[in-house]
Length: 361
Image 1: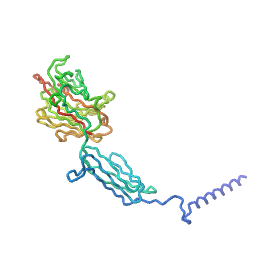
Image 2: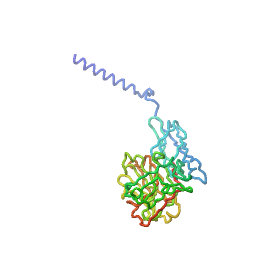
Image 3: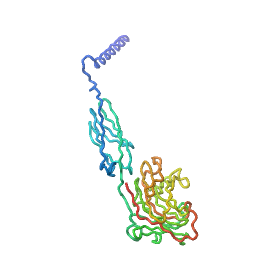
Image 4: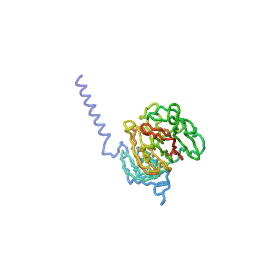
């Protein structure tokens, strides 16, 4: 009986080998594995920048580009853009519309891959240089006289140093913050108030306007006098749960009267805050006598700071930094403190005037 089962096992094994060989036979010309692989060829890529002409070689500012692709024998064609975004054309040809939204004129490399049958493919790439002008999404023009617009702003109050050993008490008084003649005027005054020797104003857009990325722009004439510390800046809206500096802070413009001709731009984040912040400065001799345009271009790639269009500080952004979530705007003028320094004993009052504050995306 034992020999019978051994003989049977050998027979069935031989039968299985015979069937397997015949199913892959080469003499009949019949192939049950499907059609032979056909690789795509002749991959062609062209691009049309919307609004491109002799006066606008990089487009009309919309950032829109139409990519037309084709390849012989292609089942589909895939376009991969910088940053990892992927769009696919089904079939051997088609057009993909793509908007590039990094502010200014930038060059982008697009990788293109055409797929054939049987896991075959061919690749190529193209580069386009595109101009993007951001669109205005929020603005404060300060065109209605009186108290700052409560739709846009909350006036904060109090003393306590505000984490910087500042000397002022922030009030809601028109003496410290008012709109007049198309300008916001934030005035610091030598005035005894609730135990403080100075009064001033601090206003924020928290819960009224918050945003991620864009271009922030302000036209302002700054205060003067030793000890003054006007600022135009933004704070991470999650500061209550992500304790500073983990929430991030973007100081688009800071000026101190003890460094009268110097404009500072600074980022605060873990490992770089306070006296170790990521900062740079620019000399502006007329900061307190003339209006200048202060701006920050903030994207997932970088934060760039300008005075009158002149770049003076760049910080590269990444997912490791707290600059990829909503922030709100703050306008204020402190007195003294860690950065403001010693206050002139003869100081009486001084004003920061802001013509407008705008955010583009």
